[in-house]
Length: 356
Image (tube, rainbow, N blue to C red):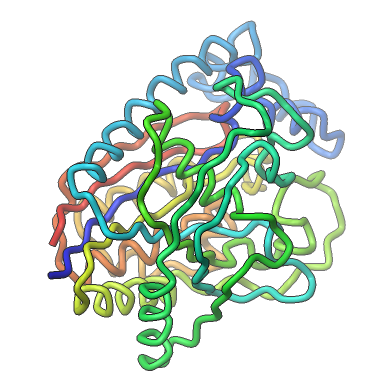
C-alpha cells in the first residue's frame, strides 16, 4: 500500500568544496566593479555577516556552517532510511546543465533506467567543482554511484499528470548532461555525506526555476551591470504547488512507498540585486518559513514568480511542489530547521513530514 514521506533539503554546491574556498561566491561578487565600493566594504555589512567573514574570509565560519548542515542532512537521511522507500522522487532545478537553447521545459520527469553518476567527472559549471577542483571528501574522478531507476513508476506518474491536464515533458535519456544536474547529484552526495551508500531507486523531476536567466545568464553568476536579454519566466509557485498536489494524489493511489524530496537552498545572494548580490533576503525567507511551519499554504500560493525573483528565491520553486503535495495529503510537519547565513550565499532549510 502506498505511503508518502515528504523531505526538504539543500543542494548548496560549496558544501562539496573544502572550507578554505566555501565563501567563493561572495569573493567573486566582491570583485564586481559595478557594485558600489561602500556596499562591498565589510564595515557596512550586517553584524552577523561581519562576524562570519571575520579576518579570514569566512574560513573558520565555513567549518561551523558545514557542521550545521551535515547534522541536518544526517537527520533527513535517518528519516529516509527509517521509511525505506521503493523510490525517491526529487524536485530540483536545471541550471543550464541538461536543458539549453534547444529546449527549456517548465517541468520534466526523467524516466531513466539505471544511470552511472560521476560527481567529479560529470560536474557542470554551476556545480562549482568543474575542472578538477578539490572536493570535501578528497575523491577523484572515478568516484561514482550506480543510480537505480524506476521507469515504471516514472511512466505511471507521467501518465497520471497528463491525464490530469498537467502537461509535463519526459525523457528516457539525458540531453546535454552526462547524468544528472547538480540539484539531484548534490542531494544524493549530501544525503550520503558519510558515504554509507545510496541504493534507493531515484527519479529526478527538474523544474525551470531560473526562468528569465536560465539561458541569458546560463543559470549562474554574472556581473551586476551585465546587459541580459531576459528569457521567458519560470512557472509560478502556485502552478508548482498544483504539480506537487497532483503528483501526491497519483502516487498515493499506487502500491509504492515514495519519498518526495525538495532540493534547494532558499534566497540566493548572487540573485538578490536588492542586497547588491552580497547576502540573501533573509526576511523574505523567514516569512515563507513561518508560513510553512504554520501550514499557511495560501501564503505560498499567493507568491509570484516576480516576487521570488526579487528576493533571489528562484530555487524555492523546487519546494513549492513539496508544499502542494503535503497540503493535499494533510501531512504533518514533524521537524524543520532554518540555517541562516550571510556569507555562504543562501539560507538553508530542512524539513521532514511524517509518512501518510
